Structures are given as structure tokens and as C-alpha cells.
Length: 306
Image (cartoon, rainbow, N blue to C red; front, side):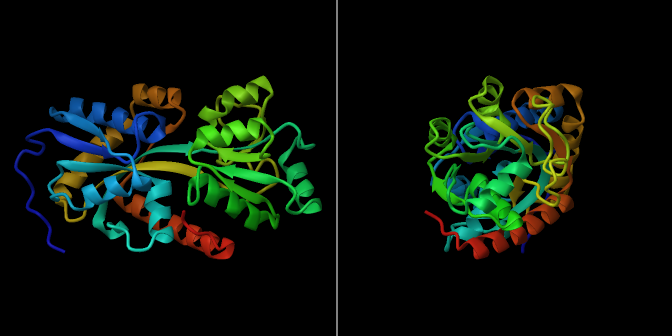
């Protein structure tokens, strides 16, 4: 692969950060947070451009085909970055077309049930599912989404059977869980925390190593007795493959400084995610590990894209 020559005095002009989603949500919020920090640190505008549609593939293809000079970047979402290449043949981009710069955000997920389900702990849910195979259903934001693959991994990990009901986005999925049309929903906390606190949903566990600060009484999956099952949604900054290493390293170093800032961490927490830095090599390992894990789940669950 031919690597472009490092631009002198990078960045010498505005940089575009392409977001594969409309405004709102963790992907957009993390892009705007890091864009603001990079603008301040490097003295040039880092402009967020929302390119939703095509399950993220429009934005990914745009960045993959961009000149590898550091002036077009991608804020990548784990569901798209890992899931799309496994589920969709003949994509207009591939993972190898994108160079990792840094991890910027991680969000846990929370396992919730409609209160009509007669369980109050994760252990009770697993026992109920085993006693009533196929009786309950779960919602996802769509085929191939983190909530879909993550729940399939949960099923395989626990040896349970739950019917999948896909939706187009979190909003309609949540409405049917609240209405008890569907009973189980594994999703990021911000969209459901109000309903958990009001009692309209019951939270059984969070899928990270640590408890979620806004739900301090909800145990982790390990604390609830389900060891080895974790599910994180992550967002990372990528550049086109072939971008000079000097540019990647410069951007990555500034992301690290931003992620270590208390102000950044506070802003991230207010948006429902953790500001977390990982360097390029660790991001590559994260992508490879998760791709292997998802591939097993997709094969075992015979999962197909829409």
C-alpha cells in the first residue's frame, strides 16, 4: 500500500470528521466532543459532517476513498465497523481501508425486562428462560446491531432461547418493550434510564466490568453470576489507510490528552458514555478480537442482514 507523504505543518486547513449517523446519540456526541478538543489543540477547525444512511456504509465508503492526508476522518461505531463486513457482502469499503487513530468512547449496555416478567435478578431471568424456552422475545435496533448480536451472544453464553424482534432504531424497540409486546431489551443506558427509575422497566445487570454511575444499585453481569459475558459499544477515530504515521500519531496524542481531561470526561458522562483512550495498535486488536467473537455468534445464530 502506498503511503502519502506527511503534509507540512499538519493540519494546515480545516479537517472533516465524518459521522455515519444523524445528529444525536453516542456517535455524534463523541464526534463533536473530540472535534472541539482537536480544534482547540491544533488550531484548525475540525468540522463534523453527519452522513447517515445505508447502515453507515455511505460514510465509511466516503472516508475509505478519501485522500490519505489526514483531512478526512471517520468516527466509527462498533456495530458498523465490526458487523457490516460480516453481514453484508460486497461492501463499498473494508476494514483494511481504514487506519485506526484512537479509541474515544465506550458505553456499557444494560439488560432490561418488562416488569411483567416474573424475575428480579439476572440469575432468575436465565432460570426462567431455561424453564420456558422460546416463550419470551427480545427487541433490537435492527438486524446486525449491537443489541442484536449482543443478545445472541447472551443466548449462546447461557444456553437459552429467546425470539428476536428487530426494529428500525431504539425508539420503536423501546416503545414495544414498555408496552410488553416484547419483553427483553439490551441497550445503552441513556435511552432507558428514566424508565428504569420510574419502574416501567426492570434493570437486571450492566454488561461492563464496573457498575454504571447513574444506576449504582444494578450489578454487573459478573456480580450477578454471569461471568465471561460483557458487551460494550465503542466509538473510535479512523483515517483512510495509508495516512502518514506522523499524522496518525499527532492526532492520537491529542486524543489521549483530550480523553484525560476532567472536562472531557464530565461532558462524556453527561452524554451517557465513558471517554476512553486507546492507541492505534490497541484499537486494531479490539477490532480483530470483536470481529472473531461476532463472526462466531453470527454463524451459530445463522444471522442475516436485512
